[in-house]
Image (cartoon, rainbow, N blue to C red; front, top):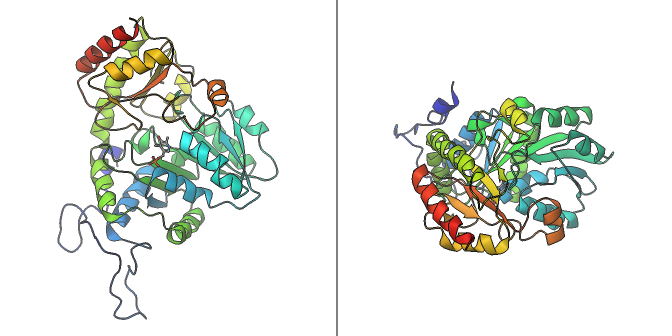
Length: 381
Ligand SMILES: *Cc1c(COP(=O)(O)O)cnc(C)c1O
């Protein structure tokens, strides 16, 4: 089945009791067990809830995995996945990883004695060199946040297989509509469903999907024990969001491509980073592993004063953290998503004081261009 169809018909798309066209919000904590010797499918809602289960089923189907899991946030999903490892284990992590993932690895999981080496995932040799006898997994993103660098997923799988490592990726920017890493051999995909999957900037949620049964069973035990589950109301909202993921993504990435080209020619703008641009160094690899360029762009202004003016001047785009909503969102990584990263570290990774990230929404391209043009003109005054 085409992914567009799977977004609508996920197998658990009708309520078995009433025929309702969506699985209802089972707002309950517990389920009656009149005969404990023959328990039903549900007992306590941390362990299982029909609304969350319908979403988890959809996620597994879309990513092409065995088990899907819905968590209370993207960070809860990532942190629960990291609990698969033990103190003393070592991970090789892409250096352009999401800021919150960097923080949890260098803070909380450092206390837990999980060792991490950050390496340049755009260069497979650099990942390979970081592997030690204690390494248990690779954790990478592509395209990365906020510079849209491309990681070759097939090379990562090859390295992981050679060293018997779990290959983990955060697929938030692409979604399973555009990129399905498990089909290329990755073991675990995580998402912030807060972004494109939910799609409306109205909830916080996270996702993990596993390729193999055994890893899935281990993660199920962690989800149940650690308990960072997604509630039924938000599970329903994510499921609802997913139904329009295809049409949203198609429209948003079309506008993103138009804006990336337009920004490249703007006198106030330096480099533009977008995998769909001909000038993007990772374009060929990206096209070999994903079916679209996505809806996130980043670009350089001269420096912090220009960025601050742009954020104040724009009328249409929401100056905020986050991405993947129906509204365009303009973020300032240096002071928002990557504020937790020390400045020298941030600069070393190319996240300059003039870098802006734009998540393109569903507004008309012409209106976005007019708004950004007048705001960018003010930055040059
Ligand atoms: C937002 C984000 C996260 C964290 O997700 P939350 O839902 O905010 O906890 C993780 N990875 C990426 C790439 C993100 O954009």
